[in-house]
Length: 491
Ligand SMILES: *Cc1c(COP(=O)(O)O)cnc(C)c1O
Image (cartoon, rainbow, N blue to C red):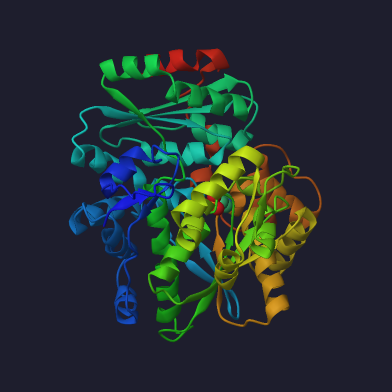
């Protein structure tokens, strides 16, 4: 299996290890596989008896053909270990008849990013060896909260890799800050900057494009790398849990082998839902993928009309991981439905005018696979409360998806089994969850977690317990102009 860029008409080929090391293609496009492997129904049935790491190794080996099955199994076993995922990697909960929640937040940072970021650094570490890279990869991350912690936890103590995370000093929640500054590991660093998230991101981008910095780092044995969500190494592990959820439904007698299901995914950058589309192309019986958005509903409009238009107001919502107006991974879907030439043209229009319109047949292909729905803040809060009162506690992102799944059901009467993808622990967004249920404000900081526990009786997710009692390992705060200096100090 080889890969090429979504924007390269010549289709220059790269190995998986090169693709994982490089992240983004040099023409700005995203790497895609040159073919889609398939699994027969019998192979899917056989997977149902395997452990999660075995499922992961089986599926990943079809894409990462320059990694052996044994290497992938070793990495998946370490990534999805009972120490990190004490309740299993991706438990499937029955919410009500025909509706299930695939809980992807049972890992070490209580957010779905762990599903990819626990294994990707291991794949990267091997990629460095496979490509003959002698330097250490230095990962720089600018974060507005959740990704930073998941990246730190995923890269900690991994060979040939170091990671440094920058966050805006007043731009993350108290809980998010505590999670990051109490990080452990011999190869990690965390630094607050005086500024907002954009300042942090601009600062990181500046370092990436600074030839002098690059040379100095190289002299000292470092190459820069990113843990970006468009890296194929982050996308591929996300395909696995769709197969896993289907296997769980089979094993529990909820479906017959071959029976089609629907999935509903709370969407931001379009990575998670795109992984479902790949699973479908590989032969997993998925009929519709419901793309769930919050008030930043650029994707809902796109699926409805074929027009992608980011020229609209940006809303800060209580599902912040979905507050996105440019969904980078959509480029991969465009490639698979419209081809290289059209994709390059759409992306050019997007960067020049913030808007593009796909052709009628591309729109039809997309609409035959996807349905777009959105939930505003009031609908999200009401849905969260309604499901809680019926016995299921969901976070705010998952509640957007639950609301959209129900809207889809009302609109279509499509009564196939529906798997809603649950992307964060309710405790990760404790204050908004508490407020949605009680309609009163929760106490500040970590007290909100205790208040939610007292209200619901549900145990606090283990990574979020006793946060304020842990040792603070990082207290550096610098001006945004000093970021590079901090990187040099770390190296
Ligand atoms: C990242 C994230 C999402 C969005 O996933 P995409 O792959 O970017 O679409 C949804 N919910 C939570 C909690 C997330 O952290």
